[in-house]
Image (tube, rainbow, N blue to C red):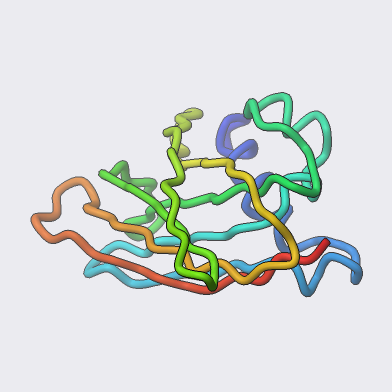
Length: 146
């Protein structure tokens, strides 16, 4: 596997290999969108190692979180039009700007945002994978703890 693909998988797999104290805080999910599978996760940014935060340009903090999205058609990364938003249980919505990251064959999208824990956020991700005429919406809830 190329070095750049390892960087992508480092972020995605890092979400699986955490200590027990953080296990309840993380989420890693996927959704089938026709012939594409979307993988997504949302975690507090202080979950990531300082080196990873610096590399991808986000601040590590207990009051910040990172949304990660990737699209795969089979084993091939696929770009897409992706927008994301979230809302607190009070209904207060906010947009999450996403940055496309390309490293070798890997393509993924990162967005960091402020979170006021404890909170349950409802995320909405609108996706149109390249080569698709359909827009898909995936929604999920994530709890954040102080």
